[in-house]
Image 1 (cartoon, helix red, strand yellow):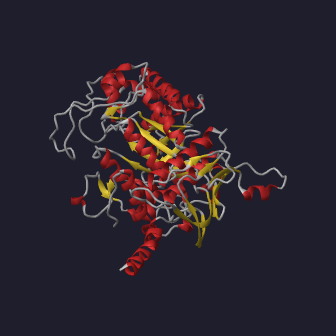
Image 2 (tube, rainbow, N blue to C red):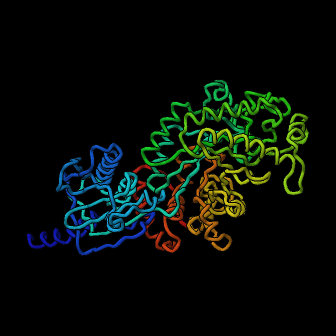
Image 3 (cartoon, helix red, strand yellow):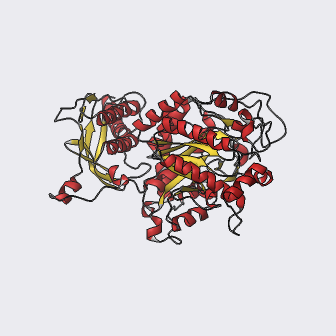
Length: 553
């Protein structure tokens, strides 16, 4: 009997070892991974992490790594900055750079190169090297996603010997969330940021204002958010004519926005605020009806869609209002990029408004056959905003409608109605963020069986389609023109997304797909291989308590 018991126990040992073995097949996959699976380094509880404690960023990243190892495996590591025999060691400087320099001054690093890191696992432990502290964060996320996910506490973790060298493909790796149609708490936004960081995203595009609600506090205009954020009720379904009878509101104070900015910065994510102008403004017009062409009244919209009522371009008070709002926005958000929207602005009111037509005449605007007077009038507003933001050291982003009246000097185009606008802007040597609906609008259904999914705005965007996106459009843009493509972004609009669970269902795993578009070279991508790596990410989402779509088309 003892003999049989011994055999049973011995049979179980390999299974236990496999369950506690790191696996570097992660999402997004690093640029280079060379594994020696025949040898392993064993990480045990009580081992330490060494790092430069004099650098607050490096210290924070060491703490993140320690936290993530314990969360997923139960293995507690010590923070021991000066331990020369530490199991995990963080050091500034890449070996390749030291060899290349040989006393010569190197070229200025790109932002992508600043994020570079290497991970080396050998008999001496786990060595993480980075050019700058951000590289340690990226490396820590790579190790985090490589860890086995264990219930309880692991006795140890086996790390196969490996050499990893990594840096991102695109400088801009964005994700957008609409918090105007539906409002989400600060805690939800923080979880959203955590998920973005897990995937190497570095830009959070935060959409604040719509016809259905104004969500950013402006201290000089205290009634704006208090009243403009509240709609008396909300239509049920797709403008069915039936309403829920419930008042709906909520806005972010400037203190909360700063809290989010700081939280994001610790995870190397820049927060890009968007105040959509001059359309999508009924939330503001409700509070200040004098800023509209007709004088109102303008109730905060209770239905979905786009209101014909927009800011009056001919009213001088409109520009005063916009500069007040944008001035406070710049005080709260340090982002170099500020988004002014500019999309879906109906011009019906402007055509009929004496003030708008008088302003157009004052500016000498004429229909040139390519740009209408009203589109040029919007370009004038855009130009005024661009100047105002430039005086504060900021760059303006607008949706691709900003091209319709002639693009401003330094505006960045966010191409959403396909890639045509982005191609046009890049050919003019303007910076572009690619986010076409066909590949990047994750408010669309992701599975064909729509009846057994949470509600979506319509359309169909499966995981494979997101994964297939190539933002540089090599068949239409030259190498020189491709340099103006900053990167891709996915957008989550929330007309029909009202809960945190629904947000993350729409986001995941399509964020996994876009993360490889954002991070990996096109020749690295393989959808079948990606699908084989995806179950590990879903296990991680389960451990983190984050909802996601279980199916893959």
